[in-house]
Length: 103
Image 1: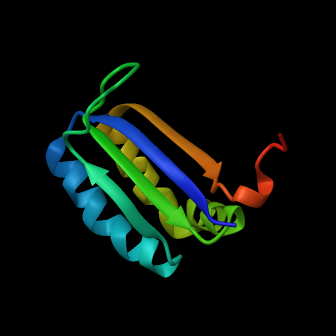
Image 2 (image 1 turned 135 degrees about the vertical axis):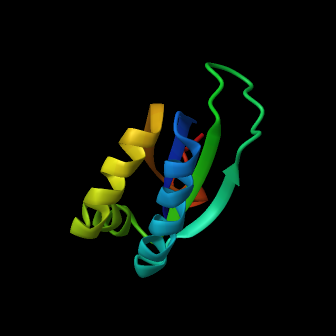
């Protein structure tokens, strides 16, 4: 079942954040992630507004965790931490009708 990583954050250092994005894309490709959405102007319907909203699709939760725990990602995480604030990353399972709550 696919899994999704959602990212919402504020950019505090745009140049460093742009460097992070350029460096993380090859790592996402390595883990066969799909960038479903990446928006610098997402409309906030509820909650606090953030500068960036990203949704990543992975083949499974294990694939998402393999990306997140990849040793090559550690220095990139540090770069993201230094370039952003108010970050929230969430890992969620895709929805399949067969897993819906019975009526």
